[in-house]
Amino acid sequence: MENKASLRQQYKKLRATLSSAEREQASQTITNEVIGWLQEQVTSYKQLGFYLNKSEEVATAKLIDWALANNYEVFLPISNVENKNLTFLKVTAKWREEITENPVLKIWEPKPTNLKLKGSLDVIFMPLLVFDQKLNRIGWGKGYYDFYLSFAEKQPLKVGLAFQKQFSALPIKSEPHDQKLNLVFTEKAVYC
Image 1: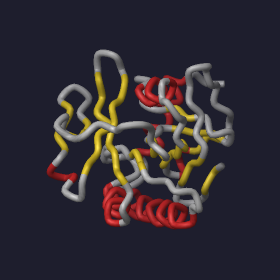
Image 2: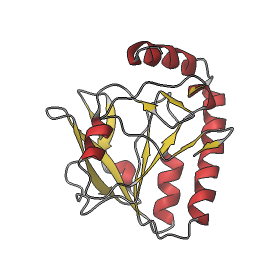
Image 3: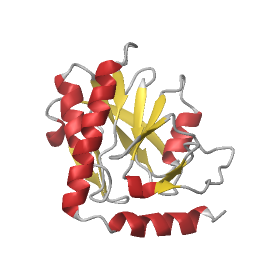
Image 4: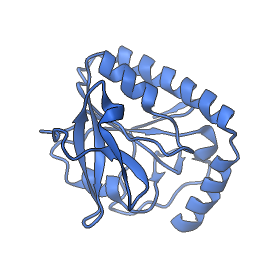
């Protein structure tokens, strides 16, 4: 098994081979699949945690807009660089006005003035670089999501959003602190 650092580099390069048009089309397919899945759920998921994607990741803006328009409570993470943890803050339909760029991590996050999540998320949508058949995930390597989830009061359903090129047919070595996903949506399949 390859180590995580080399897998990160390999799959970053592989994902970068997607053109912006391919990324946009695949993101729309994934968005449609996730919306269909959420509409089919008989359980009452109310609080959804999303991430604001980097340009090369699966786009989440349309999912966020749809969730807000359909009366879900939507939360976005803010990163605490000192302790490598996440705090999820509630956003509204005007979420594009409620975000700011984190100068250290170069990612978009909600402004700290937004309301903090009380309790637990029902579903958390997570970015990733690579995943395998057993739903092991490798992210950016900072451990923010793993740390957040290890201390969650109640475990949310963990859903990865990825392009099919990010699937590894070979198993990924996981460590005790690594949080396994429950589902992964790609433009070609849903893994569970």
